Length: 150
Image (cartoon, rainbow, N blue to C red; front, side):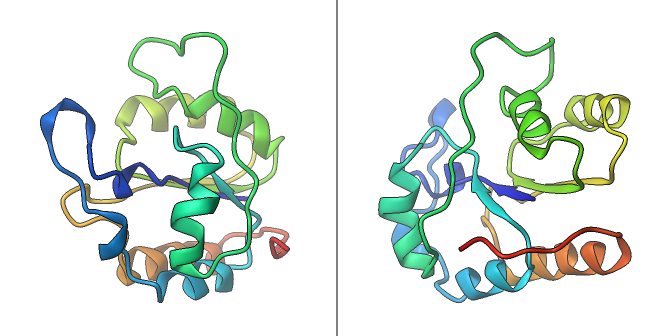
């Protein structure tokens, strides 16, 4: 399972820092994401809007959306961490996000029997081809069952 975020595409980034607008997203990233061979999932406060706004720009089919947590995360752990672990259900997974912290890595390592890659995207540039190349390299070294999101 590969989970990504549309938060880096939001033109009104929290805490006063602007984010790239959706129009600046490279449409070539969609085929590259699909080529990873993972079950793709949106993990974003955009919810289903990620399928309506970002997905078409990338040429992605409608993707499942990770549920938002109902309880607060442990101190220092991102709100997405536990829901993504739950959604992965013990399977290896990749999480691409610009807000991953060492606390998230420690939490996942302590709670995960399966391989997991928490890949922090540089927020000042957003997701780029090199990020997906790094993920593909990790996947090539990691025993995972690959499938495609329909």
